[in-house]
Length: 234
Length: 108
Image 1 (cartoon, rainbow over the protein chains, first blue to last red):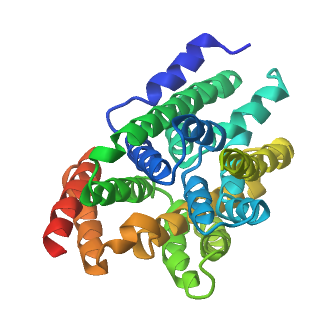
Image 2 (cartoon, rainbow over the protein chains, first blue to last red):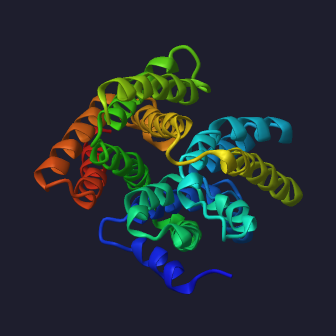
């Protein structure tokens, strides 16, 4: 089934001192508190993180429920905001592919694609033999997924003790962590331009369409940087 | 109420899994050395950068209550701390939360 040694390696690489799991944990504590305030039960909150495991999607669901949006509207809004998971999945699956591995592993473990697990894999996959990378990935995914679920529970029960300033402080942890992580991976011309142009275009396209700004910014920024990288070398 | 919460959670998770599933499905034929892979890789990084900068500049939810000048101060300080601590990710993250929490309680 799953190679235990590589699975464990994946788990362990998620608990390094500067692991993205910190940012993940902080933001799911905030989600747990938010769901509690919306009137979710603890079971529903756990169920939500277990099945969705994507922060902006859960936020959109919460916002839509407050305004009483229909199920179809919730589905479309979440699909739009989480569609960034599509290029993210395409950009890691080929790294994990090996003909000796069964396909169900890929279709099951794609549920683990999220910013934190994606970054952990991207910074560690080269050290892992290609045949076992999928098991390594399942380890990373399981660890980060459990952190998210555990943090949701902590946030749910801690919500009565968190004041406004503490909730705001928790909310900044996630974007600041990933901003620094993104600056940290700017090592090639192609990736540096992808990150800089994307960061500039996201807010610029916000003036045109708040819903589509991230997606359009990413596609335009990614395409420009692809050509810059091909021309000026990686 | 209870059934509609469960249905909303199911709709959210299906909508989320859809993008992940399509990603796994369409990448079956893509090799990691191909040009199309590099293009998708650029789009993935660029989309994440767009998402993060949008979250910081035009936040939704709790962060939108914070004055934008205060947010800019915290962003710049975090980048500075990141470089001073030799690209450590933990110090700027933890300090940004403390600085923002402290400044915001004085500002309001």
